[in-house]
Image 1 (spheres, rainbow, N blue to C red):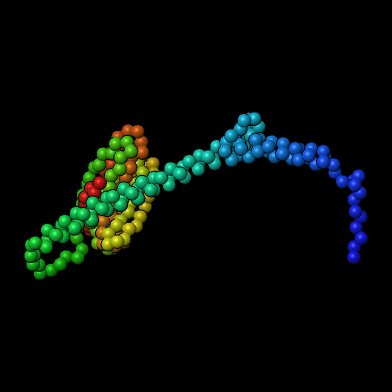
Image 2: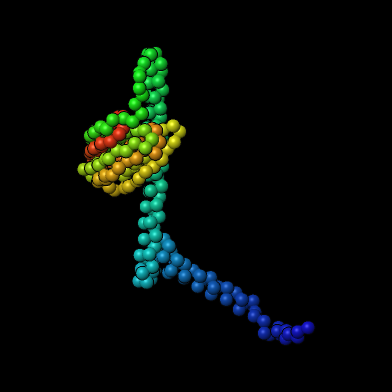
Amino acid sequence: MYNTDMPTRAELPSTQQLLRSTVIAILAAAAILVTIVLPAEYAIDPTGIGRALGLAEMGEIKQQLAKEAEEDRRRDQEILLDRRSGLGGILTGLFIGTAQAQTVQVQTAQVQTTPATRRDEMTVTLKPGQGAEVKLEMKHGAKATYSWTATGEVNYDLHGDGGGKETSYKKGRGTAKDEGTLTAGFDGHHGWFWRNRTKAEVSVTIRTEGQYAAMKRVM
């Protein structure tokens, strides 16, 4: 057994001392909250000490990053909703076309599986906040080179859908041009969705060349 010296009653802190220590701790925590935590995390600096220490600027950066992240999340949701809306129009057109085709008997000696190379150009005009989608009808593995330019900055999503599949090839925001080669990952419709986030009207001109059946604006 260990022998320990028990403190005497006189050595124990009084109620008044405990209360004073508690008040000091609360005041210290409040001071840290006001001068350090609020400026560094939320850019709130009622005393000016946080800005003098460079903490308010840190908080402003964090708030700006959080705001941009929220804008990106909303933009992605809007693009997804617009794409699904456009896909609904495509499926409706396919169902109508299939029903019409069933009323006519067509005989062919050979089925062409790969479309001939073709070239197209299209210009769409977007009002502030407006979106537009242009798609190429492509077979799996088909390739098409493309380049597009805009008279102002736009957000865009290069994607594809068809046969129950959906994918995004490339995204960008605040962009005035892009070019490259699009390779279809599956049979379906592959192309671009643009949205004008500026306060002025923007025109987008897309030029394509490759193996696809048609170019269509679907929304």
